Image (cartoon, rainbow, N blue to C red; front, side, top):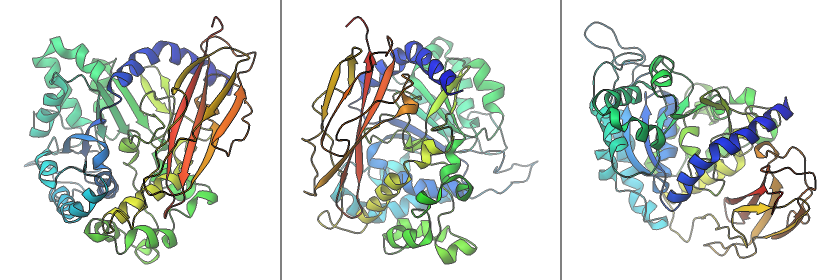
Length: 453
């Protein structure tokens, strides 16, 4: 099974990487462009808090109310079902506005609250799978997809994909000449299939649209206690949550605390942010997970099944592709919670990783490779720790290589002599500061074998 996946990954690398990575290379200095659609479920309301604390990392183009098979608004003939009034996003942005003056001390790129408020639209909310009418939300998606800016747009379906489907249908009906352009520009990230619009409309009508379907999200969703090994659970348990997130971090994190219920309100245990992988996938932390679905990052890793990218296993565990990063992304979240209330000097900020080589290298079998991150820096002047490791599951080369001095700023290894043409080896450089909480950033070096080099 593992060999089959490796062979399949090599084929995917050859056929897919050119289109996706050339697009990424041309846009790498730009922030990821994103549109969120959400059904307002509890997990979405929690995910929105984390999303707003990463708003400085994205070019946000829309925050759109939608529906799902779990939540819909209803209409004159159909009652609502578990619907949460659309005012909840306004309330979150209001809380964001109260901590905004502090956030911009840490990064002036945080968008103004008024800008975010202008990006809130109501989409197709009446029924599950509702895509009959054009709505302000679907119209906004159309506007962004048809804009002349070629930057890829991540369309995130935190609930159903129906408002996105309505936008695509409008383009198909009114702008058929732009359909190919849109398929090359749009990236669809689905958290489950929460209505029938992907299967019934998007997949058959937009077969070349890059679509990622996450099922590994359960590592940060309701079933996390069944999915996450004991060694990672401390970052979800009440002792850690209470200290780092739930108390004394301002009004935005107070909403997070208010979302706890039942026994979790007493313990402070994490409940669910099942929608967060949709944007965690695109956080520019150096892993470059959004450059190629097979590479993996905070939002998971994927393999191609026909025209759909499905969650892929790490070490034969489909949930590990997310939970392996729990310590890093939870500490990162905690630091940003601190940014809500602390001055720049009081809080911690992530290091900057600087390598001695390009992050994409062409190598030959038997070649010795030296990698160094000794020029990495920390904005707070904290000491740095280093860790180099091979991300075997992302490789198309199927064996393990030996890295010398893997916990030093410089490492060395040899490309195996049996490596074949176009096989790839992924080396992750982790740099962690010694602030509070400790923060990690990465660089991924992708080494492609060229036997003719």
